[in-house]
Length: 348
Ligand code: NAP
Ligand code: ZN
Ligand code: ZN
Image (tube, rainbow, N blue to C red):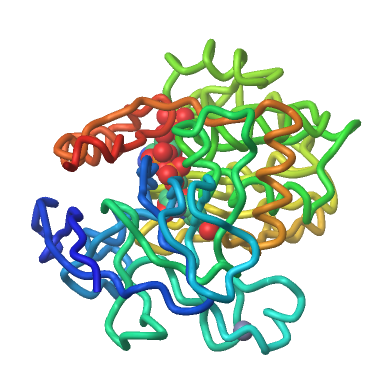
């Protein structure tokens, strides 16, 4: 066992603080990674504050992990000591159900093992995430990092990146389409970058007029301030696809009304409370509403390789570990440009 230092919360109302625990020694298929950077996802905040009502404490969040391999098990073939490596939201799955067979480990029929707050396959206790100095993960769930990208700015790709890339591909977003991205936060800003890279006419919807210039720089062709009813109305019945990346309560019906006939809105945001959906905006236009969760392991590697080829990374604000509670307060005010990334050196 290896002594590990992390940051944990011990109750929903608790702040995060230093926490000592142990990681297992690498098993034959395991890769041990020294964590260099970890992104801060709004899901970390939802989980730490028990907004999804399933948190097990102590909770060490973090699922946008990049670092360097320090040790590999005897049967590991994909990695060697010294390699860069990345870990996202999952560290294992059943590997034999129909979803796993299709490379959709995130929808594993018995449930994937999430990087934190999941049932650890080996210890039986819960998993601890990337707000820590090291992690041990089966090589099947470890990703390769393109060497040409800034490592800290790669970290958010492991969740914000794949969560937006996957639905844009599933719904075949590309040239000739008008695509909306709702919310310019961690997920939304990656959505804008990917929709633009795929050739779609990309429109960002924001509640923060001050983000308009950034959105255009990141690849948006148009920016709509969603609180302005006239601006919204001007886009009625015009979108092929909308990706909703909002972390809090908002009116999804306003966006259904902006879809063309047969248009789709996909929810990736995961607010604490249900979002009411009215029947008529769905009926009148055969529109559909769907959801999407992260992405499979092969698709995550494909996304990282795509980012390597197109020079795509996240826009980050680097923070020290002890800034995390302030960072959470800022997330709640939509005040992040556009992903906090923890420099894990600050933990030592
Ligand atoms: P984030 O960085 O905090 O961004 C959320 C953005 O939503 C804000 O920047 C803001 O953008 C907008 N927003 C916030 N409150 C709003 C409100 N009341 N009404 C309208 N817009 C509002 O969060 P994130 O890390 O991108 O995560 C977004 C959501 O996705 C979270 O709920 C997270 O748990 C979820 N998530 C889901 C998956 C999945 O697999 N489906 C994966 C990761 C995260 P503007 O300032 O531009 O309005
Ligand atoms: Zn996440
Ligand atoms: Zn499975």
